[in-house]
Length: 451
Image (tube, rainbow, N blue to C red; front, top):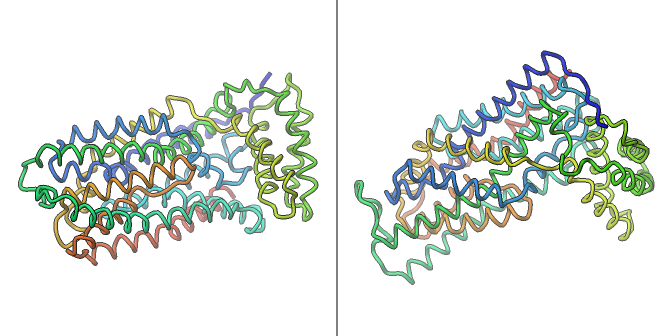
């Protein structure tokens, strides 16, 4: 029998406000990220804006449904275990306000100036800031309280993927120009006239690919954020995966295996909380389980096992066992209901429909010294779709905005027309400033609100 901690009236109202805030954030996210998927087909008149947005939203939804949740929880795991699983709603409120307030403010600021900024960077920076703020709040060493290995893994993907987009799209455009001689591919749009048949079909195909891959990667990020909110709002329903029951005997058995591993490789006492959680889980009885405590203990144990599996001091056999037990425990706390995926896709699609124009204009006319041609748009989107989809299925979050923007810049260089240095400097400045600004703001907010 599961038992649940009571909530204060303030907690309920604040968490309801946070749930509204996450929907608004995903709506604004559509201004930035999803607009990149429809920019080429709208700018070249291949599809009417409304048709393009509806089609892109549908493909986003398919991508979200088929893309899994590895990226969603890859981001969530940037947060310390105690922040992920507060015993009641009160500690969840400063985390959610810091996260969404910071990311939303920076997204709106860059959108207002028509700068293609990365919502992924905003969210990741805010999550890192909360982890830093939590360490400062509890006077813990940053080196041990923040999962730097996960952070560097994500930051490497964010840094490398735009470079691959730049080079890949430029090379593809260069090859296309020498292999396909149809002039229709290399002419910018003329008035409201759509491109000829097969060129229009190519652009719709690449838009479809980017939309699907966006859903399989960026869409997962919003799933993680929505799950953070509803778990804080309704732990009685969402703290644990209902599909797992949860299987208390299964959890207790694996916690008993995890405990000696955590103890054996805890020379500095850094995993004391994980060891205590494993001890509690191994003695858990099915007739008395507090859902929020069970979730908190599971996350502590999973985080400890992850550290053991990556430890050079551990033997190969112990690392393998730690990784296996971690994988078996994760499904109890890492899941997403179907309606969360639908809500994510709807918020992104509606946001795109309302705010796409500024970003479409920037990508079509301000990246290079000449207007975007169908061949350039198709090259950037084809390479971008491949990079984003690959990252999504390997659990790495990447920025659709930066990959597509870099791809278009690559095609401009490949065509010899050159790039608009002023606009690229603005984009680069936003790229450089996003992480430090969002980390500092989120850390400060969390420290003040959580103190």
